[in-house]
Length: 490
Image (cartoon, rainbow, N blue to C red):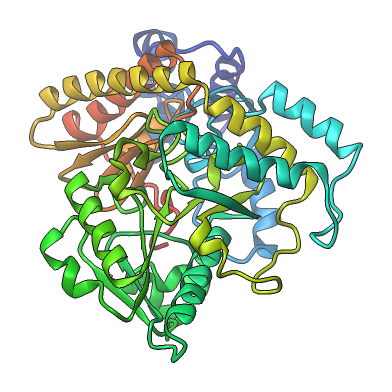
């Protein structure tokens, strides 16, 4: 036991230096420990645990660690909606996180595409402090300087970016699910104004989509695994196949009030909608008087290198409603539903509302964030960095051609499709100081902060390559890390 503690302290001391560890250097530093354990009379399982701790710069906290004690004290009071890996994070800066054991991790997840400007951005922290001392909340019963300013900025920047050329007004709320709930309700209201009988109420969404966890958003997320525990779903939802142009006319009909789709499916596996599909979908919605909703909660706000993922599409594919969240607050809970004038005129006072949405604190932060994320220089950097990732992926594909089958995505929302379960790679990478997550079926997802540097990309990909070597080449038994998607089996 004393040897194990000594090994763990050595690991922690090296990690606390916060200097990137090269794999060969790590092996040399721990060679004496490994050699000593190999000569010892300790039981095999104990010797194996010591060697693992000694060989990994960020081995998961053991059962007798400070982290484990904190987790065990807290978990009995938490509804078990998530499966989390062992580390507990307490500090972030830029593209790095530190756990309570003071070990550093390079973050390729950005809080699931949220921390676009990195962790604890100094400018955001300063504004948060200033506004917290000025005004945090008044409710939507009264005006404040920031809700309207953010609403206008979202419309202005959207128009200037070449996206949603009919953008007119914004509804500010708290989360992506709430933004999508508003979009679905607005579509239903438009349907009622077209056909007062209520027949025009159907909402179309697509398989492998993820629109949120509330009942309306969940009803638009057609996965039986997620819907069954809370069934029956809301009536009037239909599901189609993503990128199937031939099925659009049968799918979207006279009773359709709205169609909701992600231009790039995030949780579904980083699947990119084709231009042909989106143009045909827009055309059909116009023909039958249905509202077209683009859910850009994960893929929007410059993650593709343009303000909105659909900006790359022609005007004849633009939506009537656009939803955004995640990066909008860089970690602060805020979201928005942007609508065109035709939709806006159908919504009357009292039709919808929100208690916390549009509060001065969130809106002031988002105003700053939108201004910075719409910068052309940042967007060009995203494209360049996305290409750098792809160059690294190409080398990995050459090394593991049977395992890495496809690269998908745009800019800094990328998916690496594997032919096997990727969760052991997630574990192996984390225990070497890199955080990555999964999506879809056997897909590694890369959604790092947009401010990540080329050097940090190279550092992370070196760690990922080392993790893959352990899992795929050396066939080391690495347990998978479950729960690394927004919605996944426990």
